[in-house]
Image (cartoon, rainbow, N blue to C red; front, side, top):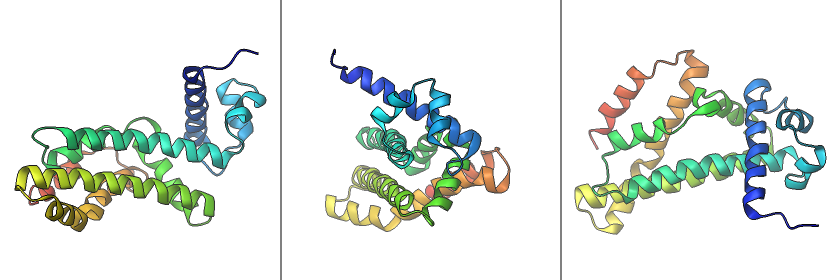
Length: 198
């Protein structure tokens, strides 16, 4: 039997995860089943279970992929010269969130499920921890670059505001499912105005 290439495995994983994301968007994380994901992907049950043994394992992989994309954006912002001001960087970071995640409904579902499921809670906490770590790394880079702080002072300043800055993104994601509006203008203007005081 020929060996499956890493590229093929990566493409198959992406196909399965995209099918899971579409099922979650349509039916909700709690209601969707592996049978739904199999049907959506067009793959056999054997193919799906060859990559993911359970729905929770698939959700963990999906969370890693989504968070990995956001972490990459933060790391790219940190590496720029000059490092962009948080008022600009956060808007760019939020602008990088697209697809089913953009309307916030999936994030709200995960938030709700994490309080009742140890597995989903662990996935959510891990994702949040990674995002916070990289948000604080971006902020520390900005403090070093723009405020001419040494590394220790920059890390301390970033840790002091990192939770609040990340909460601005969470608030933005919750706006659509909670407030029922997709008009970002007022919220994004308020975020930019507040962050300009850093």
